[in-house]
Length: 612
Image (tube, rainbow, N blue to C red; front, side):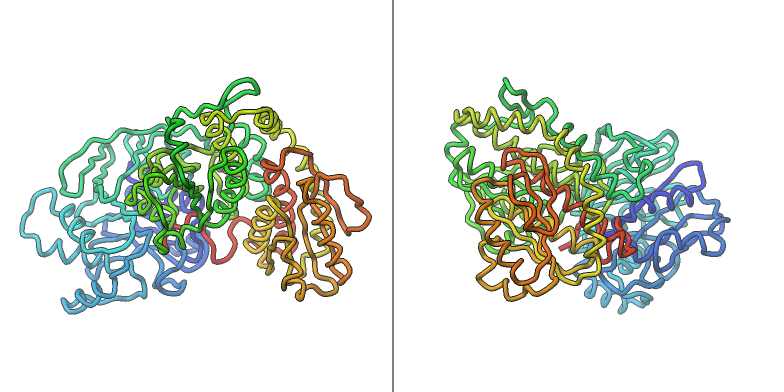
């Protein structure tokens, strides 16, 4: 869960590297560093803390090197410190390395290298890599142009775990080597220069043409050439893919924070995700899919597998698939699913959701499902990401880059895409009806209704000022509203550090009500007319015990019985999570701002979770 950047060209590398790190800081921000090849050899500049601290390092403005690597860290092995910061070098200062991932057998490698006379100065797993490369480099008696590449390959074959690695060597001042395994890495092709990054947005302002690497593909870069090799070091050809994201979409565009910008981008994200997949009078179409009626009828189960916010989107998708398609659907957390020997066969469809397309547990669960014979379908926001290369089928949320760590527009785009997918399945099965026709109309109206929901921002802000100092909050809902309660609770925890719990409203009296006392804030979502009376009754139970109440609803209720009621536009319950989450996203945002916290980069979290 770190960010890496690389550059080789004719410009000074250091400003480009630092700029890329600033754009990747959502991936990790407890330390940062850069390494360049200067006339006198390798230069290494790194420090604990945010990327901006690099500007204060003496001599960094004097770097002239036009080839370099950079890293922003989210600590796994070793506390945040200058010594544990990347890049890391070997003992002879011949090689410099940055690494994203986890080396699971680093202790064994460290012991082996120590016995060979190597010393270590950090607590990281990464430091074994440059020393292992050095070991193989010195053992190789050949002197051809592939000597460095062979040393890197041999080292990588000794590594167990996940890695994306950039390596520069003072003996090869015109080359850089990169390789990946189970960890993201993209190469941006320029004119007389090339860029490397763990995420597209970091280098999108420089190029739109990208190469996407498969596991254990090795790349040798120079200023004018990019040469790809397979795991046996046979040269291979790869095609570039053009990314159509607007580079300005990774800037704040006048908003105070990326999170606020992305909350307000949701009407556009929904509009782009739905695209031209259907009209009120036409059936749903997914050009990427070719499911038959016979296949869908043969299914005995659908699994939706994801982590965190994506899993909450999956819960909303479960409601849509079961209601429209009558296929039993389970939602599972990827990190649990992969270890519990799930019952899967060729009559199971497994749907995997990942905003980044690089979530390690989700990709591992996908691979397991394929081994067991299931068809696999990926839902992601990133074309060419790892999950899309593993899955049998892939469909995309066209939300554009999401920079803030706490997901907003990616979540609502995932929900709408899952509902549209459910309609697509239902129509293939011949289950289309007036309900589906009405639901399509509601989906097409969502962008305007989101804009209406966003007009509640000042009301939400005022309520946030009243409760931002609280230590505990509770979120309640029934049916599909309970899935929104989970996501609202998670958002609050992520960026405000306030402890919160979500419960099905009907479970309140089965234990959690013991936690309700005078002054506690309880937030409830009510969007299903069939359940609103029962939910109101549950909220009365907390009111009588002194709780403050915030209600998000599109129902006709007596607003005077609650402390605050936020009205959102009425819509079909299957897509109501897209509207009801809007005030809760704003609620978390404004509480975090009142507390003076870093909204976009909450502590201990990173955007793309690429390790277990």
